[in-house]
Length: 147
Length: 318
Image (tube, rainbow over all chains, first blue to last red; front, side, top):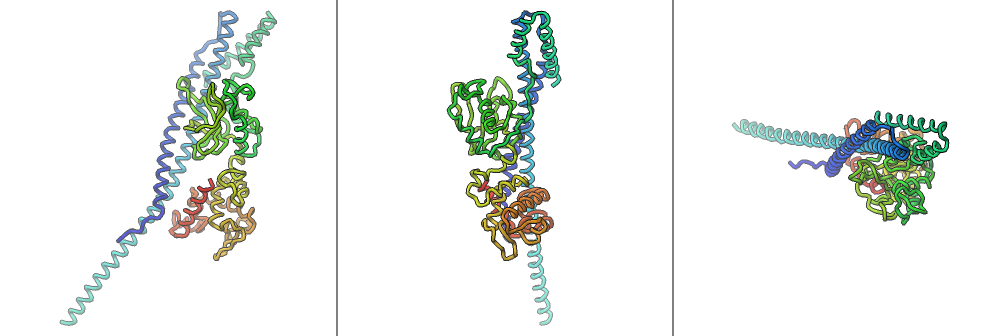
């Protein structure tokens, strides 16, 4: 018996591809966020080890202060990048979750369809068996009647 | 962040020391303070990393139009004056400033403004796209404005000019436009341009958090954009509300504005209830009870076809 095709199968396949793509993007975004966080920590640690200028003349003092200011700006930028990439990773992860939910909804429907089709097949088989049994029974009755 | 805090504390300490110079040698102290000010030490060592999008804007097209005003302006590192030149973040800051929206100065700080957008598939014209191009310096170092269709406008690099180019693969995408503007492509947006009632779909979509394209898709499939349509089953109006459902939502089904707003509210509610747009659409067509008892899209050919048609129509308007 030919089983009825699941009409939304192409949509389900598309959803699965979208989910896989979203998963790959989520993994990449998570790696970027982790790298951003690591970099921000590293720059902050460098700043933590920096010392204010002492025992230097005016020009040296200014140069050291400018260096500190640059480091502080770098730390700010690194922290901002880390924040941005972390939020991006969260958004991408949420999109992956949504894609997975869309796939799951269709998979539930596909499973219901499969079970319904299976039940229909079993019912048809039972009917066929009943027909055979009934047919044999009828023939036996006819044969015994002739006896 | 402890290291950063410590350094900022030390910078404050040094500023105090410099201020103390004033008593010993006012002239040299003033010179030092001027130098420190030029180095940025007279203000906070940190720049705001929080979004400061507080202005209003007529929509994403306004951002794109404002950005295109600067096409051809030469790149200038640190530039914020179009008469002299703009760098990438100076350009984007200038564009939003033209529209009354304030964003931070540098690309890495701008990357914390607004809200994150998951990917280019969800990006809208006017979104900021950020890149980590430099191999020598980790972190975000370039920004452009997304135009749609895989293009962006940006001030690329020294020796170049503000121009339109392929967007490539951004590391971060942010939406700075106020939510109501970002969600209203109907106001001249490409997808809903020329679609009947597009303004209603945009405003109701923004109000209830439903895609205007989805609302347009529902209207197309339900009534063919006919606000006077009445089905054989008794569904009425642009969004084909059954009288009982309309009464429950307080909707006048034959009034397009009321019907679109009610449909957006109803779809928002159904999406929350069933967790997906497909199931919400199925419930809109077959009723929430049918979806609940089926545990998915009910096995009615009409409903299954309906979900497909609306999804396809919405994709066409997106």
